[in-house]
Amino acid sequence: MSARTSFQGPAMTSTIVPSLPALADPPVRMMDAAAMDYFLIELVSTLRASSAVAVARTKKVEQEMVDAGLLTAPLATGAAQSRPDSMMSNSSKPELKGPIDEEEEAVRLRLESIGVHVGANVAERLCHDRQLFSDTLDAIKFICKDLWSACWDKQVDNLRTNHRGVYVLQDNSFKPIQRISSWEGRADALRKARIYAAMPAGIIKGALQRLGFQAVVVPEITTLPQCTFQVKLPKGT
Image 1: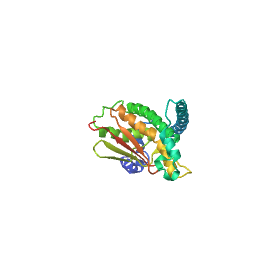
Image 2: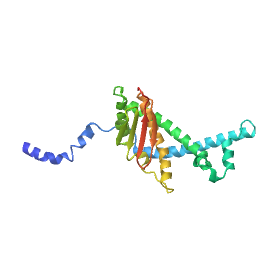
Image 3: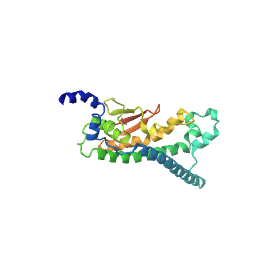
Image 4: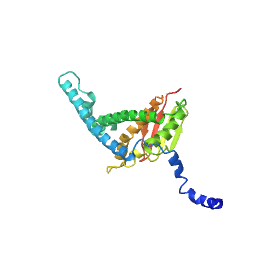
């Protein structure tokens, strides 16, 4: 009987044993990946429409105050209109500094704010039975492993630090931007992807805040679907 067991052991290892750890300690799943994708798509669309209305309302009020003599007309607008396109730099062209940029920034800020709320609550749930993190590196490792697995079903692919409070978290196939593309080309696809990285940046920021660390989180996307988050923590934390 013992000989038979030892003979069958290696064959059983590849089919049964790997599932035992998963059954004993199942991964924490707080977010459904497909539902999160649909939610983020609809959220971006809704906030973009809302921000467009808010910006238009603000512009209307400003114009009414200008017409009533309560405000002076912006000098930059008149100067830009009086100069030919050939004399205008890329940063001063109307199409680059118009209401669209303001709307996108408003959408980004609101997405980040929502992400902060989500990240704080997820971190609190994950750390319910843990001791407080006294070291920033331990907190960052928690973000890279536990938070990433709970939110995006994997761990961070690469973590770098300069040991002065700056950490770089890299995900080579970041789920929120995996399916983003644009028929207008790579530049437009990257622009769209940056909007969808705003809420994840907020999630990281909110999680660190709940752990007691005030951080600045800046997402960077240069090649889809890779996403890098630069996390800056104050010195001495």
